[in-house]
Amino acid sequence: MPMSLKNSRMLSPTISKIDSITIASRMIIKANSMKLSLPRLDGYFAIAFTILSFPVSVSPETHSQWRQYTIGSNGVPSCRGWRGGLQYFHARDWRRLDSLHRQRKLPEEGGPVMDIAGLYELQKIDLNMDKARRRVAQIRRKLEEPEELKQARDAVATQRREVERLQARQLDAELNSRQLAERIEESERRLMSGEVRNARELEALQSSIESMKRQRAQIEEVAMDSMQQREEHQRQLAEQQAVLARIESAWLAQKATLEEEETKYRRIYVQLKHQRQRLSERLGAEALSLYTQLVERKAGIAVAAVQNGACSACNMALPTGVISHARMGDGTPVYCPSCGRILFAA
Image: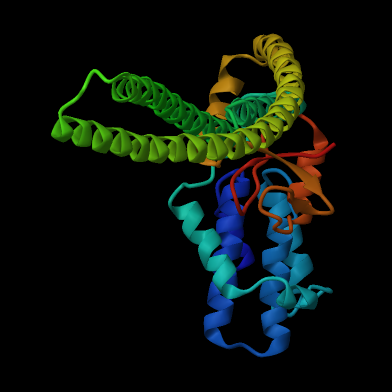
């Protein structure tokens, strides 16, 4: 059974929001385990949701009033329109919430007055600064030469080396051919001049001339083959140079655009940094300390906006009382019961 009216008066002078949520969650767990009939189960939900509807601490007198309202004159919990809560809240959710509060994972509400709107603005600045940093890092990576350009340059360099090799081979063959031609000419001159009279010497000289002619023919064939291959590779080199020029031109244009964009984002980052510094000075050290702790613990998001009755960070539906408290704008931090982030309601 729920706590009696007498027990409610024995509570401390005020019941904090954290304690209210803890009481409500334990009531739901107990009601679920008792397997009560629907009217009595609705009564437990009525009490639990009424506890959650208080945006601030409640006094024992107020506590007595809502007890009389939800329990009724006969002492039996009444529904009072809360039956729909069954389809939105489940026992496992309340167990998780109760565990979070018992482990003190959620910060206590109240405390120093803070500029919640300023903290939300600070978070937007930080997110934009992070976006600018990431974009600059992406641009720096893109400013590295693309693989296509590197491959085109390598292809041109390889083709140029092949052309140079074939040209050197052709020149060597032509030089050897000229040298052999001179030797053949000298041998033929001796053969025709009558300087050699011995038959064996004449035969040897004739054989040498024929051998040099055959060797020269082979060398000239190598020179011709080298020239033909060189011309083909020169044609391919010209095509690859044209491809390289096209890729390089496109890359240089893209590089200029990226460098311009990088300059823009660096300028934006500096402006945001100055805005953050001015806003930080206005918010104060205590608010910044809380904000920094939540940023480190909550994946970079410390303040969540209330959107369509839900937390924009975890997308969990928020109790009406929590939303009302967040909209009061009294400077007291109000936290999302699910993710523990500070709530900002415009």
